Image: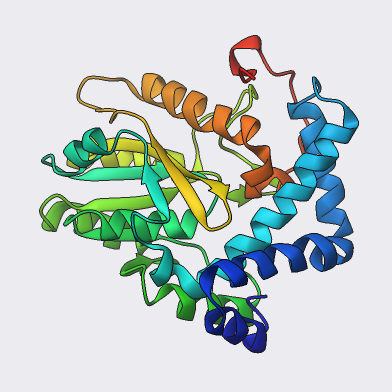
Length: 294
């Protein structure tokens, strides 16, 4: 969808709810049939993460997941129409506002759940904190260009590639109450290295960078994620900030892993990373503490 200028233009022309529905339908009924490897990988991973479910229930989750991916891609053309309280409901909004209104820099930490671009846009819209997003361009240059164009209207500052670490450090130290928006579940070597899902994985990648930066500049972590409720409507879930001044790295990682890992399992129908890893390689059984309460 992102690589097709006509489809992107169409999604922008249509009313946002219609575009969202059409994107979901195209993804579930067209894209899924052409991306059989990703579908099979997601199916195998879901069987490991949710062995308690009958196969029919897991297939229903996969179908809803393809629908969510398509809706999310279509909504990229309409983010500016969705960044409002009519489409995003914050769980405990007074508490959330108090956190954002507080002092000091902050690392807003999340995963590819629901609509992660809308989450980035919403945190920018809902606070006067200077924001910066960290991104990694897709390998396809056409998709990368279209994605950059789509995000330019709502993302504000974003940084990636060489020199990103220096730019992030400058942002957090030179701007009052700066916020860094970072997605933790990046893919490397056919694995998503966070959440761990019980695997013996040491903090690395974006998580390791975030931990070092937070300690260096005295930033607190704000774990949060956005879940689709129906159509282009979402609930924003958040966890009280984690402060490196009072918590060890291991304690912070454990809380982040639990909060976001549980969400990725229980809301697998909205987690993009399900098809971006191979849990059949060096996978370990999920401990009872990570099994979601259903």
